[in-house]
Amino acid sequence: MGWARWVLVALAIQPGLWMTFDGARALIVGDYITPRSGEYAGQLGPWKHIVSAVGLDPRGTPMKAIYTAFGLAWLAAAAACALGAPWGTKAMLVMGIATLWYLPIGTAIGLVIAALAGWVLWRTHT
Image (cartoon, rainbow, N blue to C red; front, side, top):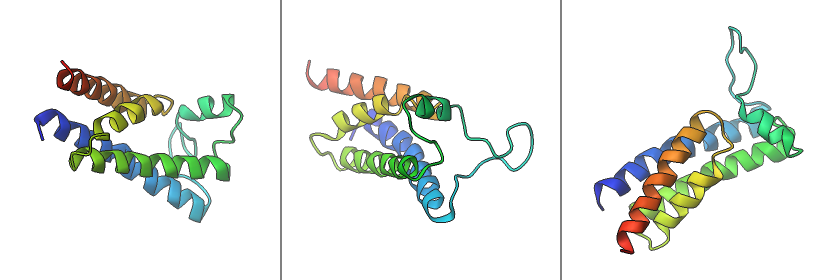
């Protein structure tokens, strides 16, 4: 696997592990991990506005399940890419785009992954 695929895998593991852990924890304990003190104590990130705008309660059970499923999908895409599955890089591109709602960190990682996966796919087809 070339350097670009290793970078894709390394980047994908970050949201994959975090979303799986935090979402599963929220399903079990009742809430996501949030800052304990300071200006943003107890608040979710800016992604809560996007989720609310489409009619989901950011702290509701359906969103916690979606959040966890997103994390698992990231890990599956990373594994597929690492193992050289023919669809692995395409899955990374899809996940990068699909995670743009997760402001701010997920958006940044999603943009980098989508751009890099698109570049890898373009290079393999030219």
